[in-house]
Image (tube, rainbow over all chains, first blue to last red; front, side, top):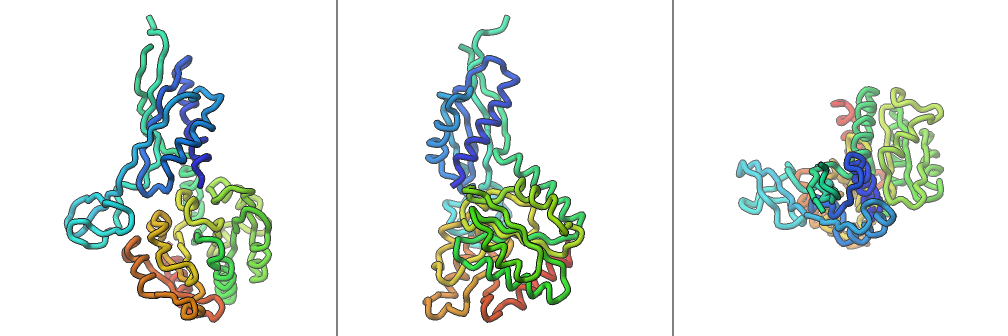
Length: 120
Length: 223
């Protein structure tokens, strides 16, 4: 499990972004995590509380949006969504697929910040 | 209070990915084929690699290995018996190798330069989960599975098996007493990674090694 190091990277990355928003407070950090990224959302959330302590991210929420695996099926000529990660076959025609279009993402999608006072 | 959304769309492992891309470029420029070996602890990565290094060396090929472990340099010492240069990477608790560790250990490796190698093997920390997220710039990721582990390993660890370029089944010499269901194992690997090259080997008897070495030669030929 390397969720703590992942969360530490998130905290570093967001803290860096905050340099462009002096005085801002982070309310929420939204992630895009592919079903095949091999991280557990609950572990991320647990580690997040620890890693964000004493940083500008302390008290913010971590929202993990899990993306299903999408494969390109040669036989159907289309992108198809897999129901799980136990079989890499097209759910429509049953042919094996090896061209992945989505499923390994491990990204910070966006952050919601409180800018404080509205600037004049 | 004025809240706003700031779009980032930034890879969390971006730093590693960038370092890995730079490593990949340097491997290609040097003409060295780099392989990343990943398995559970106890699969027999070290024994398999030891035999691979010996066989390649006896064919006049220039080989080296980086070996990741949490602690101890036992594996590096075992592998060094092949006569190939071997360097240990102790991660001290970190469950995987990352591109920064590889870059750091390639620098200042006495007597070894990428340009002076035909093959560089990276033996990852024994772990089927975390190494799959960390690109080391390798050309070929090898997932290893022993006959003692259960045929459903690929189903349990789809992230790794799906990201592998080749699969190696080890300890085939004891497949029978272990009740290893070969057909089921092959089917499960193919279910997770359709069409992947699979090698059924025994580093002890040498079974399957010729096929594996032919694959390595072929892969290096198309660098």
